[in-house]
Image (cartoon, rainbow, N blue to C red; front, side):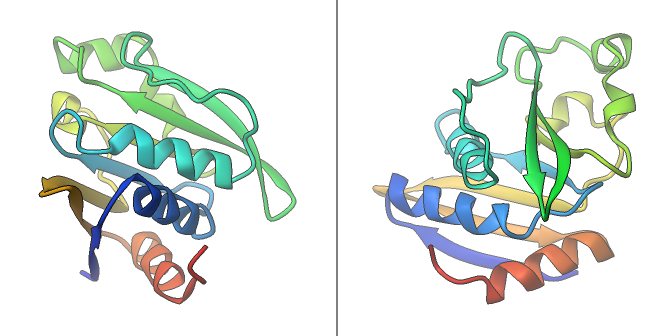
Length: 161
């Protein structure tokens, strides 16, 4: 398992990491975001989506549970599904909504609060742990698959944006 740790001093640093992650995306990638309320999960996702080319408003899917976004990745249209499972009462809600089908070889899935559905979610390629640390955030990215390792390799060699 490979991992990457860094300190994000402010929201601009969180946005920069989101931009760098956008350049590391690949179809079929599943990313789980872990952290307390206010740790920066949605801010990171918003920056990632905008850097991936999405020009519209990126809202937190706290009440809808999922928001789809279409971006162009290396000239190919890709759907990024942003899940926020914070308000889910049971893992069965996830299955009942039909979300399991979104985890496939062509979509990219980003899941906030994955522990709410951990019994029914597929394993992630990449875990991102965000925690408040003083004025900023500590972040650790853990690759859990070959696809996740490739993402981290690209991230570490991606230019700072």
